[in-house]
Structures are given as C-alpha cells and as structure tokens.
Length: 156
Ligand code: DHK
Image (cartoon, rainbow, N blue to C red):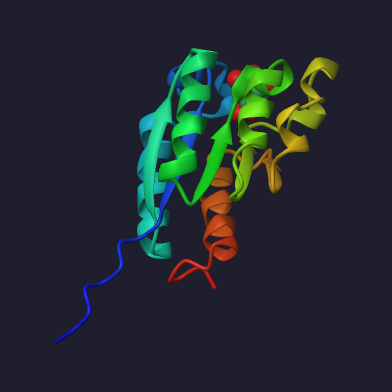
C-alpha cells in the first residue's frame, strides 16, 4: 500500500494598507503590476517550490494581527508586506514576535532610498530576512527563501 502524499506546507502572504491599489497608485514607485498579478506570481512560485500560498490583503491593522495569530496554527512561514504599518506598528511587530517560524519582510520599493520616516522598520527586528526594492519579484524571492528555510520539497 502506498503512503498518502503529504500536503504541501502553507505560507501566508500578508499585504497591508493601500496595496489593493497597486497598478493604480504611484506607478513610478510601485510599478504597474496589480495585487492580483502578484497573487498569481506567488501561486506559480509556490507550486514550483512545493508550497501552497494563502494570499491576503487588509487596510486594517487589527485584521493583519488576527491573521498573524492564525498563522501560528496554520502556516509554515509568513511573507509580509506591512506597507505603511512597517514604520508605525509595534502591535504588528509584537504579533510577529510571537510567531516562531520564518518571517520574510517584503517591500516593493527600496525603503532605504526614500523619505527618512520610511527607513525605520519595526518589523525588521523580528523578521528572518528583508527584501526591499526588488519590485513584485521580491515576493517570489521571499517564497524561495522560506522554502529553503522550511526544507520544502523543492526548496533545498
Ligand atoms: C509600501 C507602502 O505602502 C509604503 O507605505 C511603504 C511599501 C513601502 C513597499 O515598498 O512595498 O513605505
């Protein structure tokens, strides 16, 4: 009798405020791709890596926090673009600090080249790694790194 194949690990990909406007918002900074394009890229990348992606976006801090709490039970890793909450949210940092698996922080733009207030991230203090300035490709890079860290089937 052959063993049932193990289900692929799930990675939560969480997106913060205003990222629902990608493709319409400041294209010179954030590019022309929409969040739906990025979601497709994440699903394609994940399936190549032997992962599954649960892709979400919210403009509300408490919703992002609730999803980070849910990830404690449900996700093998988190990719998070906290958007503006990167620079303001001790609450999101604390929620992530209570998550013991890999966390990849992603920014589409290079926050270090931008206004001084964007150059500090509360999230970086608790992230496994940070990818900033690689555009939408940053999400694929983050998933590749998570696959490696959790030793997903094709991530080694
Ligand atoms: C997105 C935002 O909405 C900004 O508030 C951050 C980040 C940068 C990004 O580059 O993805 O400062």
